[in-house]
Image 1 (cartoon, rainbow, N blue to C red):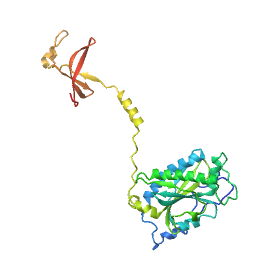
Image 2 (image 1 turned 60 degrees about the vertical axis):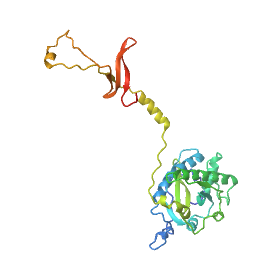
Image 3 (image 1 turned 90 degrees about the vertical axis):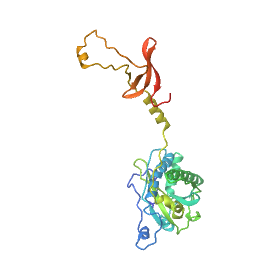
Length: 317
């Protein structure tokens, strides 16, 4: 993998020239040659790519908190390489290597030193400028900011992995020399997840998360299966508002006191003043719309005709 050369310009304010970073693929493609040993047992990596797309939301939130402005974030296609090849693909310049943990298994977060220093300048109220040449080591303030950024990445990963299960992610002390980071050998195969972040018309910046294949093997069954999003938690406020709105709906209530039967001849002979006798039972039906609500007794209330409900259909008496 090849990073853009360091310049005195801020990586966060330069005009956009390309949405995605160029990668050197000649050496990496060798692992896919016919007869070459496979670097991982996880098939087409669709499940992990899906998790990376979910994690991009948390990565965006982490950078927005540091940039103090809205940004866009996305997950680039995954690559599988050996750690030594990945390190060789980065140019000789200051790089922040942030140790991460996945249920105790080591992994890495990687970003350009120029990006970290630019974020540090923005954090303290600057314009994101970076001095040239870059320093050889990070200051304590830069180390602290890298740890804060790593904590945000760990939280984004933990949230993204929830559909597969509870996985705990942690963050360690940032190092500028990858040789000082233990737990991952240079010959270990790693799955590289690259996240791009851009604000406005600025050139995108990138941060990599490296999963060692060994750390993912306990999750091989989940990663080779279908990823199903976790159902969203019910929104109690929305449910309450919907219930209140439903309770204000007005429905017609009616009752049929009697339905006398007369012959057609009698009906044809009716004239004003004629009386049709009716008889109704002690209980009359009470209807709501086209459904039977229950039965009740006819009477009066406050000088008006009324029905006292004596039975509700489908409810205990």
